[in-house]
Length: 287
Image (cartoon, rainbow, N blue to C red):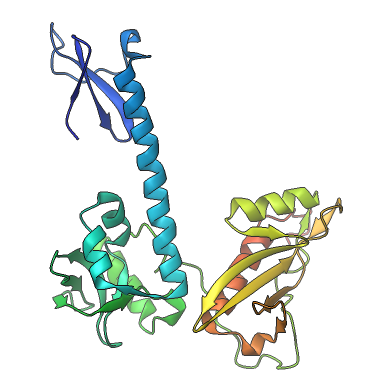
């Protein structure tokens, strides 16, 4: 973004998300100033630029949230849509370097570029640039990536950093010997908190919704939507501790954990573990 005139003696621009100024005359002409001069504090152009910076910040956050939703749900994303938003830096910085899968499972790589014609350029595990033009691609949840460890190693070798937590997202796989009769998982139950409000606040700070006595996480798992829920206590309770983790269908019916898909299982366990990690650790117990 270029420099804009602000009065007769200064120009302003957004630099790393903040309004910066430089003088247009005198000994410091053309040099960026360390802080905004008093004369510009309430200048209309400065205020407009500040509002624009706030919009850019909200836009960037919305892009991250949308791509995270695509990834967690492993939804097919039209290649045309990726090509259309690619010129936008906010979108491009989020999409670039995500692992994408084309028409078949062998077409896996790190997204590096998208052309106006709808061609995607990816780098595969051999370090080769691959050009694909599928109608849609998926941004798989990491628990669905068979080569996850290889992808992690390759990303570390070449210094890939993802804006959306995909490769290094904490994942859990359902035990093969899980009892088919159980209706909930208690691995992360019993994490004590000083108050129920503190536990609820932790849930919301982690991005989870609090509904009644539960912290919930809604996940699209295959062709259906599943809601993972951790008991956190009734709103009128004072003391609280994390309860069992369970899964429910859109009508509220409890699903047996053995009937839950890999993404819903992993995301439910991720939520339960994150809530439990904020517990009060009693002195001398180490637990």
